[in-house]
Amino acid sequence: MRQKRTNSLCTNHLSRRDLLLQIAGMSLWSVFHQKGFALPAAEDPHTAPQPSPAPTSLSPADDQFLDELEKRNFQFFWDQASPQTGLVRDRCSVRANSNTVVASIAATGFGLTALCIAQKRGFISLSDARERVLVTLRFLWKKMPTHRGFFYHFADINTGERVWDSEVSSVDTSILLCGILTCRQHFEEHSEISLLAYQIFNRVDWSWLSEDTSLLPHGWTPEFGFLPYRWDYYSEMMMIYLLGLGSLTHPLPKEAWNAWKRTKFEYGGIRYIGAFAPLFVHQYSQAWFDFRGKRDAYADYFQNSISATDVHRLFCLELGKQFPDYSDDLWGISASDSQKGYVIWGGPPTMGPIDGTVVPSASAGSLTFLPQPVMRVLKNIKDHYGQAWSQYGFVNAFNPLKNWYDGDVVGIDVGITMLMAENARTGFVWDTFMKNPEAKRGMDRAGFKKYQPSGTR
Image 1 (cartoon, rainbow, N blue to C red):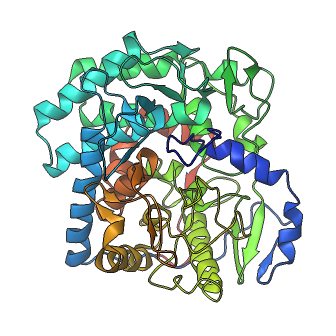
Image 2: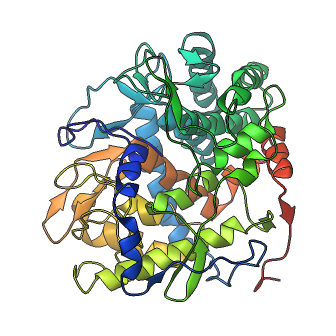
Protein backbone atom coordinates (compact mmCIF):
# COMPACT_ATOMS: atom_id res chain seq x y z
CA MET A 1 0.00 0.00 0.00
CA ARG A 2 1.77 3.12 -1.16
CA GLN A 3 1.17 6.36 0.61
CA LYS A 4 2.86 9.76 0.52
CA ARG A 5 2.99 11.77 3.69
CA THR A 6 1.66 15.26 4.13
CA ASN A 7 3.09 16.07 7.55
CA SER A 8 5.98 18.44 8.05
CA LEU A 9 8.25 15.59 9.12
CA CYS A 10 8.31 14.22 5.58
CA THR A 11 10.64 15.80 3.11
CA ASN A 12 10.33 13.66 0.01
CA HIS A 13 6.79 12.30 -0.39
CA LEU A 14 7.97 8.71 -0.89
CA SER A 15 5.15 6.20 -0.79
CA ARG A 16 4.91 3.11 1.37
CA ARG A 17 5.63 0.90 -1.63
CA ASP A 18 8.52 3.08 -2.85
CA LEU A 19 10.15 2.87 0.58
CA LEU A 20 9.65 -0.87 0.71
CA LEU A 21 11.38 -1.20 -2.62
CA GLN A 22 14.30 0.88 -1.38
CA ILE A 23 14.62 -1.36 1.66
CA ALA A 24 14.40 -4.47 -0.53
CA GLY A 25 17.39 -3.18 -2.48
CA MET A 26 19.59 -3.34 0.61
CA SER A 27 21.31 -6.46 1.91
CA LEU A 28 18.13 -8.07 3.15
CA TRP A 29 19.42 -11.58 3.02
CA SER A 30 21.58 -10.85 6.04
CA VAL A 31 18.46 -10.64 8.17
CA PHE A 32 17.96 -14.38 7.92
CA HIS A 33 20.82 -14.89 10.34
CA GLN A 34 19.02 -13.21 13.19
CA LYS A 35 17.82 -15.41 16.02
CA GLY A 36 14.55 -17.23 15.52
CA PHE A 37 14.04 -16.39 11.83
CA ALA A 38 14.60 -18.60 8.81
CA LEU A 39 13.51 -18.97 5.22
CA PRO A 40 12.51 -22.63 4.77
CA ALA A 41 13.76 -24.72 1.92
CA ALA A 42 11.51 -25.00 -1.11
CA GLU A 43 8.49 -27.17 -0.50
CA ASP A 44 5.45 -28.45 -2.32
CA PRO A 45 3.16 -25.40 -2.81
CA HIS A 46 0.14 -27.66 -2.32
CA THR A 47 1.22 -28.61 1.21
CA ALA A 48 -1.50 -27.73 3.72
CA PRO A 49 -0.65 -24.77 5.98
CA GLN A 50 0.57 -25.43 9.48
CA PRO A 51 -2.07 -25.13 12.23
CA SER A 52 -2.44 -21.57 13.49
CA PRO A 53 -3.99 -20.04 16.60
CA ALA A 54 -7.78 -20.09 16.43
CA PRO A 55 -9.68 -16.80 16.81
CA THR A 56 -11.84 -16.47 19.90
CA SER A 57 -15.20 -14.78 20.26
CA LEU A 58 -15.69 -11.20 21.43
CA SER A 59 -17.32 -10.46 24.77
CA PRO A 60 -20.13 -7.90 25.23
CA ALA A 61 -17.54 -5.53 26.71
CA ASP A 62 -15.33 -6.03 23.65
CA ASP A 63 -18.27 -5.29 21.38
CA GLN A 64 -19.10 -2.11 23.29
CA PHE A 65 -15.49 -0.96 23.04
CA LEU A 66 -15.37 -1.62 19.30
CA ASP A 67 -18.67 0.19 18.79
CA GLU A 68 -17.16 3.33 20.31
CA LEU A 69 -14.00 2.89 18.25
CA GLU A 70 -15.99 2.54 15.03
CA LYS A 71 -18.06 5.65 15.81
CA ARG A 72 -14.90 7.67 16.20
CA ASN A 73 -13.32 6.15 13.10
CA PHE A 74 -16.40 7.00 11.07
CA GLN A 75 -16.31 10.59 12.28
CA PHE A 76 -12.98 10.96 10.47
CA PHE A 77 -14.51 9.86 7.17
CA TRP A 78 -17.50 12.16 7.66
CA ASP A 79 -15.56 15.23 8.79
CA GLN A 80 -12.56 14.87 6.47
CA ALA A 81 -14.45 14.28 3.22
CA SER A 82 -15.48 17.11 0.94
CA PRO A 83 -19.30 17.44 0.87
CA GLN A 84 -18.96 18.56 -2.77
CA THR A 85 -16.73 15.77 -4.11
CA GLY A 86 -16.83 13.01 -1.50
CA LEU A 87 -13.04 12.68 -1.65
CA VAL A 88 -11.40 11.93 1.72
CA ARG A 89 -8.27 13.60 3.04
CA ASP A 90 -5.14 11.50 3.18
CA ARG A 91 -4.60 12.51 6.80
CA CYS A 92 -5.47 15.17 9.34
CA SER A 93 -4.38 16.54 12.69
CA VAL A 94 -6.37 15.68 15.81
CA ARG A 95 -5.06 18.77 17.58
CA ALA A 96 -5.60 21.51 15.01
CA ASN A 97 -7.83 22.28 12.06
CA SER A 98 -6.63 20.53 8.91
CA ASN A 99 -6.46 22.66 5.79
CA THR A 100 -4.59 20.29 3.50
CA VAL A 101 -6.22 19.78 0.11
CA VAL A 102 -4.59 16.37 -0.45
CA ALA A 103 -7.11 13.57 -0.77
CA SER A 104 -6.32 9.88 -1.14
CA ILE A 105 -8.37 7.62 -3.39
CA ALA A 106 -7.55 4.71 -1.08
CA ALA A 107 -8.89 6.64 1.92
CA THR A 108 -11.95 7.42 -0.20
CA GLY A 109 -12.48 3.70 -0.80
CA PHE A 110 -12.30 3.02 2.92
CA GLY A 111 -14.63 5.98 3.46
CA LEU A 112 -17.27 4.61 1.11
CA THR A 113 -17.24 1.33 3.02
CA ALA A 114 -17.37 3.27 6.29
CA LEU A 115 -20.60 4.92 5.12
CA CYS A 116 -22.18 1.48 4.71
CA ILE A 117 -21.08 0.39 8.18
CA ALA A 118 -22.23 3.67 9.73
CA GLN A 119 -25.67 3.46 8.16
CA LYS A 120 -26.06 -0.14 9.30
CA ARG A 121 -24.94 0.80 12.82
CA GLY A 122 -27.22 3.83 13.03
CA PHE A 123 -24.36 6.33 13.23
CA ILE A 124 -25.91 8.15 10.26
CA SER A 125 -29.31 8.21 8.57
CA LEU A 126 -30.01 6.28 5.39
CA SER A 127 -30.73 9.49 3.47
CA ASP A 128 -27.46 11.14 4.56
CA ALA A 129 -25.43 8.03 3.75
CA ARG A 130 -27.01 7.67 0.31
CA GLU A 131 -26.49 11.35 -0.48
CA ARG A 132 -22.78 11.24 0.40
CA VAL A 133 -22.30 8.06 -1.63
CA LEU A 134 -24.08 9.62 -4.63
CA VAL A 135 -21.99 12.78 -4.42
CA THR A 136 -18.83 10.66 -4.40
CA LEU A 137 -19.78 8.30 -7.22
CA ARG A 138 -21.07 11.08 -9.46
CA PHE A 139 -17.83 12.96 -9.02
CA LEU A 140 -15.71 9.86 -9.64
CA TRP A 141 -17.64 9.00 -12.80
CA LYS A 142 -18.13 12.43 -14.33
CA LYS A 143 -15.30 14.71 -13.18
CA MET A 144 -12.38 12.86 -11.57
CA PRO A 145 -9.41 12.47 -13.96
CA THR A 146 -8.58 8.85 -14.85
CA HIS A 147 -6.40 6.91 -17.25
CA ARG A 148 -7.87 3.72 -18.70
CA GLY A 149 -10.29 3.80 -15.76
CA PHE A 150 -7.53 3.93 -13.11
CA PHE A 151 -7.33 6.86 -10.70
CA TYR A 152 -4.42 8.99 -9.59
CA HIS A 153 -3.24 8.10 -6.11
CA PHE A 154 -3.52 11.61 -4.67
CA ALA A 155 -5.86 14.37 -5.78
CA ASP A 156 -7.05 17.82 -4.78
CA ILE A 157 -9.97 17.28 -2.44
CA ASN A 158 -11.93 20.11 -4.07
CA THR A 159 -11.20 19.61 -7.76
CA GLY A 160 -10.06 16.01 -8.14
CA GLU A 161 -6.95 17.13 -10.01
CA ARG A 162 -3.74 15.14 -9.59
CA VAL A 163 -1.31 16.39 -6.92
CA TRP A 164 2.36 15.68 -6.15
CA ASP A 165 2.85 14.25 -9.67
CA SER A 166 1.39 11.08 -8.19
CA GLU A 167 0.99 7.91 -10.20
CA VAL A 168 -2.10 6.29 -11.63
CA SER A 169 -2.16 3.60 -8.96
CA SER A 170 -3.24 0.00 -9.40
CA VAL A 171 -3.55 -0.85 -5.70
CA ASP A 172 -5.12 2.43 -4.59
CA THR A 173 -7.64 2.23 -7.43
CA SER A 174 -8.42 -1.30 -6.26
CA ILE A 175 -9.12 -0.12 -2.71
CA LEU A 176 -11.41 2.56 -4.12
CA LEU A 177 -13.22 -0.05 -6.24
CA CYS A 178 -13.71 -2.29 -3.20
CA GLY A 179 -15.46 0.61 -1.47
CA ILE A 180 -17.57 1.32 -4.54
CA LEU A 181 -18.66 -2.30 -4.88
CA THR A 182 -19.52 -2.47 -1.18
CA CYS A 183 -21.82 0.53 -1.66
CA ARG A 184 -23.43 -1.06 -4.71
CA GLN A 185 -24.51 -4.05 -2.66
CA HIS A 186 -25.43 -2.22 0.53
CA PHE A 187 -27.56 0.32 -1.34
CA GLU A 188 -28.67 -2.13 -4.02
CA GLU A 189 -32.22 -0.77 -4.12
CA HIS A 190 -30.93 2.63 -5.23
CA SER A 191 -30.69 2.39 -9.01
CA GLU A 192 -28.33 5.33 -9.56
CA ILE A 193 -25.78 4.05 -7.03
CA SER A 194 -25.90 0.63 -8.70
CA LEU A 195 -25.50 2.11 -12.18
CA LEU A 196 -22.63 4.42 -11.24
CA ALA A 197 -20.76 1.63 -9.47
CA TYR A 198 -21.24 -0.61 -12.50
CA GLN A 199 -19.96 2.10 -14.86
CA ILE A 200 -16.92 3.02 -12.77
CA PHE A 201 -15.84 -0.60 -12.30
CA ASN A 202 -16.31 -1.62 -15.91
CA ARG A 203 -14.37 1.39 -17.20
CA VAL A 204 -11.18 -0.02 -15.63
CA ASP A 205 -9.00 -1.59 -18.32
CA TRP A 206 -7.20 -4.41 -16.53
CA SER A 207 -6.00 -5.81 -19.87
CA TRP A 208 -4.02 -2.57 -20.45
CA LEU A 209 -2.31 -3.11 -17.11
CA SER A 210 -1.26 -6.61 -18.18
CA GLU A 211 -0.38 -5.92 -21.84
CA ASP A 212 3.23 -7.07 -21.61
CA THR A 213 3.33 -9.05 -18.39
CA SER A 214 1.27 -11.21 -16.07
CA LEU A 215 2.96 -9.39 -13.19
CA LEU A 216 1.00 -6.17 -12.88
CA PRO A 217 2.82 -2.82 -12.57
CA HIS A 218 2.38 -0.61 -9.55
CA GLY A 219 1.21 2.28 -11.67
CA TRP A 220 1.68 4.64 -14.57
CA THR A 221 2.52 8.31 -15.04
CA PRO A 222 1.99 10.48 -18.12
CA GLU A 223 5.62 11.58 -17.89
CA PHE A 224 7.31 8.15 -17.79
CA GLY A 225 4.71 5.52 -18.60
CA PHE A 226 4.50 2.36 -16.51
CA LEU A 227 6.48 2.34 -13.28
CA PRO A 228 9.31 -0.22 -13.31
CA TYR A 229 8.03 -2.04 -10.23
CA ARG A 230 5.78 -5.09 -10.43
CA TRP A 231 3.41 -6.76 -7.99
CA ASP A 232 5.55 -9.88 -7.97
CA TYR A 233 5.47 -11.04 -4.33
CA TYR A 234 2.71 -11.79 -1.84
CA SER A 235 1.41 -8.56 -0.37
CA GLU A 236 -1.70 -6.40 -0.20
CA MET A 237 -1.92 -6.76 -4.00
CA MET A 238 -4.21 -9.83 -3.96
CA MET A 239 -7.21 -7.52 -4.38
CA ILE A 240 -5.77 -6.12 -7.63
CA TYR A 241 -5.51 -9.53 -9.24
CA LEU A 242 -8.87 -10.73 -7.95
CA LEU A 243 -10.74 -7.63 -9.13
CA GLY A 244 -9.05 -7.87 -12.51
CA LEU A 245 -9.94 -11.55 -12.81
CA GLY A 246 -13.52 -10.67 -11.93
CA SER A 247 -13.98 -8.09 -14.66
CA LEU A 248 -16.27 -8.92 -17.57
CA THR A 249 -15.25 -6.00 -19.78
CA HIS A 250 -11.43 -6.04 -19.54
CA PRO A 251 -10.42 -9.13 -17.55
CA LEU A 252 -6.99 -10.32 -16.55
CA PRO A 253 -5.90 -13.72 -17.87
CA LYS A 254 -6.20 -16.58 -15.38
CA GLU A 255 -2.47 -17.16 -15.38
CA ALA A 256 -1.92 -13.77 -13.73
CA TRP A 257 -2.96 -15.28 -10.39
CA ASN A 258 -0.17 -17.85 -10.58
CA ALA A 259 2.53 -15.40 -11.69
CA TRP A 260 3.41 -13.83 -8.35
CA LYS A 261 5.65 -15.51 -5.79
CA ARG A 262 4.50 -16.94 -2.49
CA THR A 263 7.67 -17.05 -0.42
CA LYS A 264 7.58 -19.19 2.73
CA PHE A 265 9.01 -17.84 5.97
CA GLU A 266 9.45 -19.41 9.39
CA TYR A 267 9.69 -17.79 12.81
CA GLY A 268 9.51 -19.52 16.17
CA GLY A 269 8.42 -22.75 14.46
CA ILE A 270 5.48 -21.05 12.67
CA ARG A 271 5.46 -21.20 8.88
CA TYR A 272 3.62 -18.76 6.68
CA ILE A 273 3.68 -17.02 3.30
CA GLY A 274 5.10 -13.54 3.69
CA ALA A 275 7.27 -10.78 2.31
CA PHE A 276 9.87 -8.24 3.38
CA ALA A 277 7.10 -5.89 4.41
CA PRO A 278 5.16 -4.59 7.43
CA LEU A 279 2.07 -6.27 8.86
CA PHE A 280 -0.43 -4.31 6.77
CA VAL A 281 0.28 -6.49 3.71
CA HIS A 282 -1.54 -9.34 5.45
CA GLN A 283 -4.63 -7.21 6.14
CA TYR A 284 -5.74 -4.93 3.32
CA SER A 285 -7.14 -7.37 0.76
CA GLN A 286 -8.85 -9.30 3.55
CA ALA A 287 -10.79 -6.25 4.69
CA TRP A 288 -13.15 -6.95 1.78
CA PHE A 289 -12.39 -10.36 0.26
CA ASP A 290 -13.54 -13.19 2.51
CA PHE A 291 -10.93 -15.95 2.48
CA ARG A 292 -12.39 -17.86 5.43
CA GLY A 293 -12.76 -21.56 4.73
CA LYS A 294 -11.32 -21.20 1.22
CA ARG A 295 -8.01 -21.93 -0.40
CA ASP A 296 -6.44 -21.87 -3.84
CA ALA A 297 -3.72 -24.21 -5.10
CA TYR A 298 -1.24 -22.61 -2.73
CA ALA A 299 -2.67 -21.62 0.64
CA ASP A 300 -5.46 -20.72 3.01
CA TYR A 301 -4.71 -16.99 3.15
CA PHE A 302 -6.95 -16.33 6.13
CA GLN A 303 -5.12 -18.89 8.24
CA ASN A 304 -1.89 -17.53 6.80
CA SER A 305 -2.72 -14.06 8.14
CA ILE A 306 -3.49 -15.54 11.55
CA SER A 307 -0.03 -17.10 11.56
CA ALA A 308 1.66 -13.93 10.29
CA THR A 309 -0.05 -11.85 12.97
CA ASP A 310 0.97 -14.23 15.73
CA VAL A 311 4.53 -14.23 14.40
CA HIS A 312 4.52 -10.43 14.53
CA ARG A 313 3.25 -10.54 18.13
CA LEU A 314 6.05 -12.94 19.10
CA PHE A 315 8.55 -10.76 17.27
CA CYS A 316 7.47 -7.74 19.32
CA LEU A 317 7.73 -9.77 22.54
CA GLU A 318 11.31 -10.62 21.60
CA LEU A 319 11.96 -6.93 20.93
CA GLY A 320 10.71 -6.26 24.47
CA LYS A 321 14.17 -7.18 25.71
CA GLN A 322 15.45 -4.06 23.94
CA PHE A 323 12.34 -1.88 24.13
CA PRO A 324 10.54 -2.60 27.41
CA ASP A 325 7.26 -1.02 26.33
CA TYR A 326 6.57 -3.98 24.02
CA SER A 327 4.63 -6.72 25.81
CA ASP A 328 1.69 -9.04 25.29
CA ASP A 329 -0.50 -6.03 26.12
CA LEU A 330 1.29 -3.58 23.81
CA TRP A 331 2.59 -4.66 20.43
CA GLY A 332 2.21 -3.76 16.76
CA ILE A 333 4.61 -2.10 14.33
CA SER A 334 3.68 -1.22 10.76
CA ALA A 335 4.35 1.59 8.29
CA SER A 336 3.60 4.77 10.23
CA ASP A 337 4.61 8.18 11.47
CA SER A 338 7.44 8.39 13.98
CA GLN A 339 9.16 11.08 16.00
CA LYS A 340 11.56 11.49 13.06
CA GLY A 341 9.10 11.24 10.18
CA TYR A 342 7.28 8.58 8.21
CA VAL A 343 8.95 5.16 8.47
CA ILE A 344 8.51 1.74 6.91
CA TRP A 345 9.17 -0.66 9.75
CA GLY A 346 8.07 -3.94 11.23
CA GLY A 347 9.05 -7.57 10.93
CA PRO A 348 10.20 -10.22 11.21
CA PRO A 349 12.75 -9.88 9.72
CA THR A 350 13.49 -6.52 11.34
CA MET A 351 12.69 -3.61 9.04
CA GLY A 352 13.54 0.00 9.72
CA PRO A 353 15.02 1.75 12.77
CA ILE A 354 12.60 0.29 15.33
CA ASP A 355 12.70 2.46 18.46
CA GLY A 356 9.79 1.33 20.63
CA THR A 357 7.06 3.12 18.65
CA VAL A 358 3.63 1.46 18.75
CA VAL A 359 1.26 1.63 15.77
CA PRO A 360 -2.34 0.92 16.87
CA SER A 361 -3.57 0.10 13.37
CA ALA A 362 -0.96 -2.67 13.10
CA SER A 363 -2.73 -4.74 15.73
CA ALA A 364 -6.23 -3.35 15.01
CA GLY A 365 -5.98 -4.41 11.37
CA SER A 366 -5.64 -8.00 12.61
CA LEU A 367 -8.75 -8.01 14.81
CA THR A 368 -10.33 -10.69 12.63
CA PHE A 369 -7.27 -12.92 12.91
CA LEU A 370 -6.43 -12.78 16.64
CA PRO A 371 -9.39 -11.05 18.31
CA GLN A 372 -8.49 -11.51 21.98
CA PRO A 373 -4.76 -10.72 21.75
CA VAL A 374 -5.60 -7.61 19.72
CA MET A 375 -8.37 -6.53 22.10
CA ARG A 376 -5.90 -6.65 24.98
CA VAL A 377 -3.66 -4.24 23.11
CA LEU A 378 -6.37 -1.81 22.04
CA LYS A 379 -7.98 -1.61 25.48
CA ASN A 380 -4.60 -1.16 27.09
CA ILE A 381 -3.77 1.76 24.79
CA LYS A 382 -7.07 3.49 25.47
CA ASP A 383 -6.90 2.90 29.24
CA HIS A 384 -3.25 3.74 29.88
CA TYR A 385 -2.05 5.95 27.02
CA GLY A 386 -4.66 8.67 26.91
CA GLN A 387 -2.87 10.91 24.42
CA ALA A 388 -3.08 8.10 21.85
CA TRP A 389 -6.92 8.26 21.94
CA SER A 390 -8.67 11.00 19.97
CA GLN A 391 -11.99 12.05 18.47
CA TYR A 392 -11.12 9.81 15.50
CA GLY A 393 -9.96 6.82 17.51
CA PHE A 394 -6.27 6.06 17.88
CA VAL A 395 -3.58 8.42 16.64
CA ASN A 396 -1.35 6.98 13.97
CA ALA A 397 1.54 6.12 16.32
CA PHE A 398 3.10 6.83 19.71
CA ASN A 399 6.25 6.01 21.64
CA PRO A 400 5.83 5.58 25.42
CA LEU A 401 9.58 5.33 25.94
CA LYS A 402 10.08 8.82 24.54
CA ASN A 403 6.74 10.23 25.66
CA TRP A 404 5.97 11.04 22.01
CA TYR A 405 2.40 10.99 20.67
CA ASP A 406 1.55 11.61 17.05
CA GLY A 407 -0.80 14.49 16.34
CA ASP A 408 -2.18 12.95 13.14
CA VAL A 409 -4.44 10.17 11.99
CA VAL A 410 -4.02 8.64 8.53
CA GLY A 411 -7.08 7.73 6.47
CA ILE A 412 -6.11 4.25 5.37
CA ASP A 413 -5.05 3.27 8.89
CA VAL A 414 -8.31 4.58 10.36
CA GLY A 415 -10.03 2.64 7.58
CA ILE A 416 -8.41 -0.74 8.17
CA THR A 417 -9.17 -0.36 11.87
CA MET A 418 -12.86 0.36 11.31
CA LEU A 419 -13.43 -2.32 8.66
CA MET A 420 -11.66 -5.07 10.57
CA ALA A 421 -13.48 -4.11 13.77
CA GLU A 422 -16.80 -4.55 11.99
CA ASN A 423 -15.72 -7.80 10.36
CA ALA A 424 -14.60 -9.14 13.74
CA ARG A 425 -18.00 -8.23 15.20
CA THR A 426 -20.38 -9.28 12.41
CA GLY A 427 -18.57 -10.06 9.15
CA PHE A 428 -20.67 -7.30 7.58
CA VAL A 429 -18.08 -5.99 5.11
CA TRP A 430 -17.18 -9.50 3.97
CA ASP A 431 -20.82 -10.54 3.61
CA THR A 432 -21.76 -7.39 1.71
CA PHE A 433 -18.77 -7.19 -0.60
CA MET A 434 -18.77 -10.90 -1.49
CA LYS A 435 -22.30 -10.58 -2.92
CA ASN A 436 -20.74 -8.79 -5.89
CA PRO A 437 -20.46 -11.08 -8.93
CA GLU A 438 -17.08 -9.51 -9.70
CA ALA A 439 -15.70 -10.69 -6.34
CA LYS A 440 -17.13 -14.19 -6.74
CA ARG A 441 -15.92 -14.46 -10.33
CA GLY A 442 -12.43 -13.29 -9.40
CA MET A 443 -12.03 -15.89 -6.68
CA ASP A 444 -13.51 -18.62 -8.87
CA ARG A 445 -11.12 -17.84 -11.73
CA ALA A 446 -8.22 -17.80 -9.26
CA GLY A 447 -9.15 -21.36 -8.30
CA PHE A 448 -10.49 -20.85 -4.79
CA LYS A 449 -12.44 -23.78 -3.35
CA LYS A 450 -14.21 -24.24 -0.06
CA TYR A 451 -12.53 -26.61 2.34
CA GLN A 452 -12.48 -27.51 6.04
CA PRO A 453 -9.42 -25.99 7.73
CA SER A 454 -7.61 -28.22 10.19
CA GLY A 455 -8.66 -27.72 13.79
CA THR A 456 -12.22 -26.60 12.87
CA ARG A 457 -15.51 -28.41 12.85
